[in-house]
Amino acid sequence: MINLYELFNFLSKVLEKPINVPSLVYYNAANTLEKKLKKKTIDFIYYKGLSFEDELTINDFSVKIGSELKLDELSCILIFKGLDYLKKGKVKVEDFVIVIDSYRDDMIEEYRGYLKKSQLLDKQNGELLTNELLNKFKEVIDSYYMTVSDFYTKLKTEEKE
Image 1 (cartoon, rainbow, N blue to C red):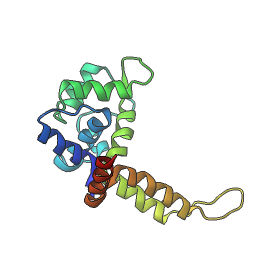
Image 2: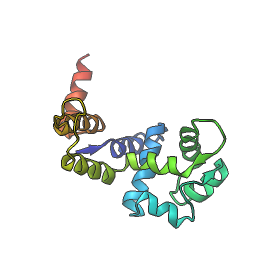
Image 3: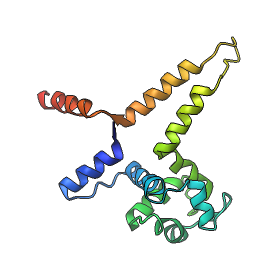
Image 4: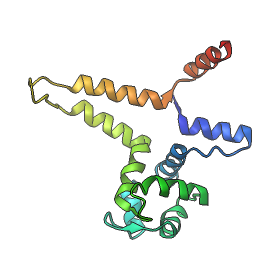
């Protein structure tokens, strides 16, 4: 399986140009936390002396979070602007944790395990929805990952068009 972040990171190196796509910046932050710092997002926040209720300005975000994750200025701005959906000039630490966790590979595996174990009931007819939820979740996962053969198949299809 190929992680899209890793694929675009490879393409960026080959092209010798940065690929500044907002979702890749989130993947980069999540990847740094997960693989380089080997910390859960919440542990990282507590390590930095922050709490869920804290709100950060762009400068605070850059110093307290961006510098530790080795994010450049553009990456900090992209993450901050993405989280500042109310356009208040501040972001909640809680929003950062939730968003970054959604981009972490280890959290995807944890959610997948949770869905397999859960026995969610349809309130109208009492039937188990586990298989339906797992199929929907698999569709989401499959949209972010592809095998090498899928990549080359798609590449050949696009060349013919």
